Image 1: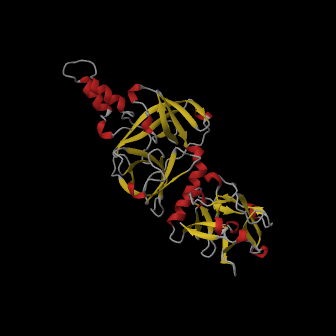
Image 2: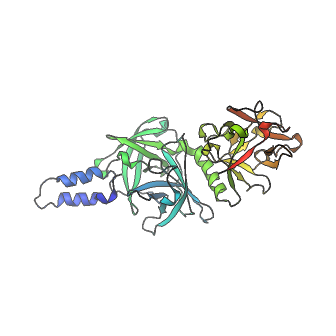
Length: 391
């Protein structure tokens, strides 16, 4: 939205329109104020405690997010979704503040610790903050087509203490993108700069999606249901990053022309193969050694997906390709790490089949091009020698 300090509340617009000294129709200034006030003040029958304000240092505007994880005992970080238009990987973590509070209660503000975005969900950013007690609003899991005709209320913070809403109706769906229109001019409208506004279903109170932009009388809402896989992975990643024993690194073979373990295109989905690819050290080549399940055998957790390196079905056959899968704390997702006795590099053995002596390898042997990874009988080939690049 435009700078909040420049906006008048809906009530103020009504008062100024109805109490003009000369009894004339709405003045030019009032018309401008009304047109800039994209979401008019309203009231919802649902709790809004799971909707938070997001502020970015150097940005005069206040933005909006949805809590997707909160622990009542304040033992783990809170996670929230917001718009990637305002927040991205280049935003310094120290510049972010998330604030939550029940209507009428005292708000609580905490600094955000990190930002994570994903190319498969380019309109959204996930924030991790210090622990913040807040209600978690359930996500609507219906398909986009099932949402056509549904009435929604979309909420936007216009200041850190002023959460406003607009009533809209879903007119059409294209995959996970919903087209919505305002139900009444009396309850305001959405504009392009409302990206990140949170939309709830008026019949259930479930969170349907976030506003991505508006053109004319139509606005667009991206369904949260499409982000479920990513959200689940990010919950795991938040816990990994919060654990003092976790270590972040990239792993590569072929030191002269480094080839890194890589999640293709940063996919957030299960069963995606893990490749080797020329090292660039972006998030899809960053991993965490996660020792939570076993203090001596780490799992390898992707920074981009929050998923683990996994041997499908705990297969013990040499030549089985490796994939990413939701982390389960099982042996087929754990590694025995050691140094090769000569020649350098780490030996990464799969812990589920110690008698089979299987190592993380590159399919087909040493290579300087993109190739899948596999488990293969350990024999110290160059593609079984993995080197850490600490990140």
